Image (cartoon, rainbow, N blue to C red):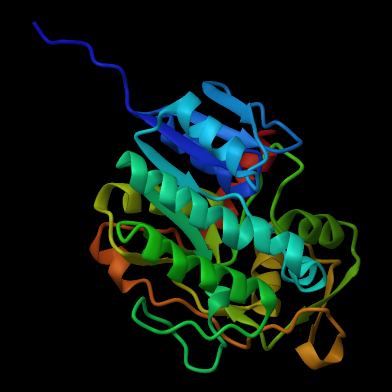
Length: 301
């Protein structure tokens, strides 16, 4: 007679965010899922949501005691470069101090820890970037994530670091991606000025979640998760315009120097994803993912 064992428990921080919500849904396949939020809960069926201020160590310890997780994926972050540039002390707490503390707690309890970093740890001068390339950030957000990477490894050498590319998609929450306002403005026939000199390897939210669950299983020391295409913001916009048939939308290419932004942006932080592919990662093409999103929006998903 086979003993019915309870599913392992996974703690996902930032469950109310764009990536966290996609990740919670995927983790439900085989895990008891516990997700944290700070102010706005994400109503995800099957997920136990816990309100916590992750910048408070006492809250973190209480959280680990309450959940007793078998694995942790830390996605919570202040992820807007301009915000981090303008609020360095506040953003440092969540982007650097908190991940280090989580890595320590995971080490103390023998728990697998997966950390979501960013392609913006690189300066954009020598793409595409492999896992062995050294960070060289040009803005405060990148500096914070790079510091978190190195300090987490010191505190817990078994930490799995996943550098994430620019993510897009849609979820039924206020914490969407940059794609929603782009679609809204194109649908209204508005003009969009998009960078021709900011190159990324965009990845859908669902594929990002799949990649993180793969990383949790394979436990590489470092993994780059991105899409297949190296493309500019302008090129991405043209793909959206084509797939969604926004014929009235006017897209204009511009350069980073044309706009004054608080945080500098690297030119090309394309990620080399060959290591992820060798582990079985299979992201969809940009057009495939946009078409799937279009059909989902038609269905009211």
